Image (tube, rainbow, N blue to C red; front, side, top):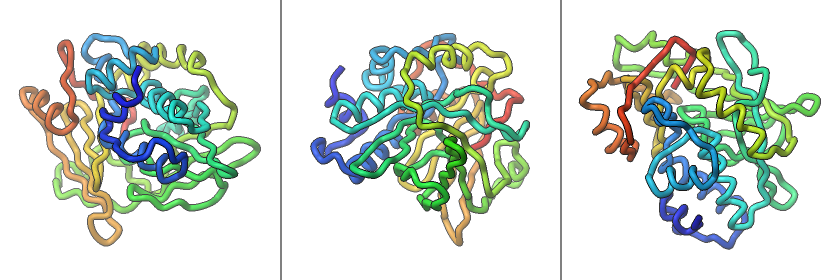
Length: 290
């Protein structure tokens, strides 16, 4: 595996030597604007593999994306390769319909130490929940970013990541009540501890996400990619674009329902993806918002 090939994939041409917050932020932003958060392999009859060499081949060589077990693992490898002090963490994701966090860790994120400060780095939560900058590991501090205000809170060794979002303007009247829109301004995202994890600890999670009939990943095809001003999301046949803070502290959210024959071109032109196998778009009843 070649770190320069990774940097070429994400279009990063800046310093590899300055291990500071500016470099960390720049690598994160290049990553999230070129590597989609997506689960399309499992909707093309192919496995979502998590071996690092397979992940590198798919994301770097084949210009694909991946979910957290792939994309954040690749970012972990890249950051440690250039010298950042980086650890893998595991998170429990908040499930709004049942108002609780998942009982086991189902999300992989990163912990980076810079001098006497610590940061949470996550390049693979996707949609409008995606951070654009590392979050300083400080309890109770509002950290405004382009997508929203993020807040980390610590209670008895458990950290919680929440968001405070803007109002949403949807010009497509038929989508104003779409289940893809989260109407809550204050949102819980996930919880985690600072216990370092090994990638092998996520193997059962990788199987569960692909095999469980009740898992949103199995029942919904999705892809999201951050832009300089917002985020594109494709869920099933529904394409959305959210422009952050387009006016008066309001996000613009535009919907479009695609025809089957339009999917392939949209994947290429917007998300930069060409798929292997027959892709079957799917949007199940499980909870998923943009």
